[in-house]
Image (tube, rainbow, N blue to C red):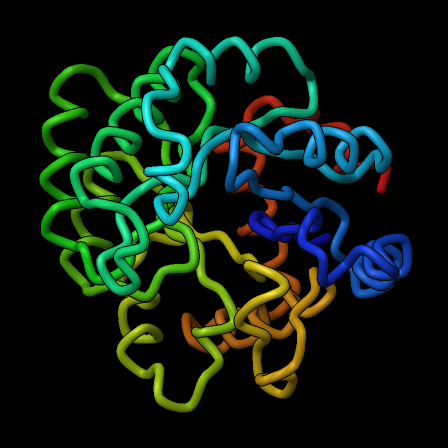
Length: 265
């Protein structure tokens, strides 16, 4: 079984055929999916999808692009939502995005730290978005870990080797998306080789970043199998072994997801 640890099933791209998308994922061996929150104020939509499908879980959080729109949401609100619903298994996604800079950087950082506080309190993993902000992400992770450890994952990894190295040192996991399969992503594949196997996950970030041979098309959870195959080849294991490794890592990180689902699905 494979797990798509990060997708966006609430996005309009899937509105017309969500049942079919989830069905195709099952057929491709993707047993579980986590649909990721980008706006706390739109959580009801995320929650409804997670409630409608046994094998779909969700998170609660504000994407850095929306940090200004949802400025000031306290960690306590994230904690309350996360602890009041069995399908909420993570915090985020939150972090820093200096590529698009859609929100002021100080507000991105404030939101990032509030999400870290919520992850620390709930012990649910923080899904971290980091784009062209490696130094500041490392600095904030270092500072906040000094206040107390918290579980986290560097999602859709496309950063440099130092962020991967430091993230792992601080106890984090690293998730690879379809970017890993792109011809010009040799640096990302080289970084993947350095990540301990017990810290590896795979994801789609659907509807974005479809892996080869679907690049340029709408991504969907079924395609995580293509990324997993490239990751397996990159680190020198079989497709079956990478499925076992990444699924085990998923359950170790996302502790709120019932392990028995791996046997039932």
